Image 1 (tube, rainbow, N blue to C red):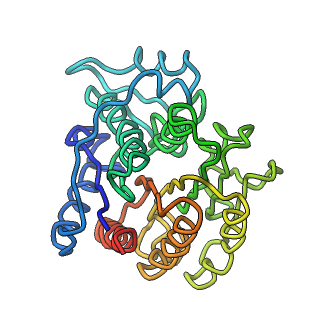
Image 2 (cartoon, rainbow, N blue to C red):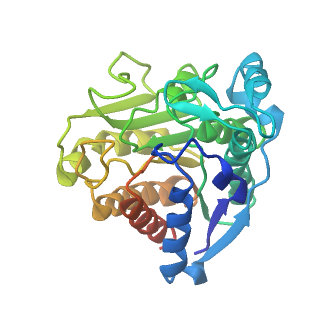
Image 3 (cartoon, one colour):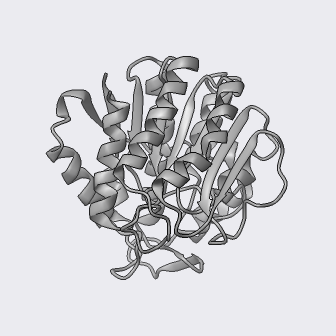
Length: 307
C-alpha cells in the first residue's frame, strides 16, 4: 500500500533561531530516518505546491490572511514576532504556504485514488493557528485548511480530525467549533499550554485532557472515546494532526508515550478508516522536538499507514 510523503525544501528554510525548538533539523532527521527505514518500496515522495489563497480563506478570516502577508519580512528583512513563541523571517511565509499546500495536495491525491494515504512532513506546524490568529509556532492551520478543501472543493459531507499532540489543538477547534461536518478529537496534557480544551463544546468535539506523567498504556485507555465517536460519525476522510511531543524523551511535555503507543493509536485510526472511508487518511506533522524520538515515531506511524 503506497503512502505519499509530501514535503517541500522551502519548509526547511523557515528558521526561528538555533535555540528555538521548532527548527529545520526536525525535517532533516525525519527524512534521514525515513530513508534508512527500508520503506522506500511503499513510499512515494512528492513536493508540495504552495497553497492557494482561496484555500487559506476557507479556514481563516480573509483580513487575517492579508495581515500575515503584510507582516511577512521581505528578503533580508528583520524578523517579526507574531506571538510570544512564533517568529517570521523572510523565508517563513513561503514555508507556511507550502506546509498548508502539502495538505491540500494530499487531499487531491487521496480523493483521486492516486494514493491510499499521505503523510505531510512539513513545518511550520498548524494546529494552534485559529481563524484569525497565528500562535504556538503556527502561522496557518495546515490541517484545517486541508479539511475545508475536502469539504468545499471535493464536496465531502463528513471529515474527522484526530489530534494527538501533547498540546490542545485550540486553533483547529476555533476554526471547526460550529461546523458539524467536522468531528474533532484532541488529546493533550492538561493543565498545559495553551490552557484550553476543558470548556463545554458541541457534541462533535471530543477533548481528552491528560495529566502530566501519564504512561502510554494509561493514555491509550483514556482516548478510547475518540474511536467510538469516529465510528458513530462515519467520516468520509480522516485527518491526523500528528504531534509526537508526547514522547517520553521530549522535554517540551510531560507525557510518557513511546513508539509502540503511536503504533497502537495509528492502528486504531487506520481500522476506522478502512471501515468507513476506504482507508483514506491524511496525516500532517505537528509537534515533536526530541529529534531522534521524533524521527523514530514518525517512521513507526508511517509504517502502520503503509501496512
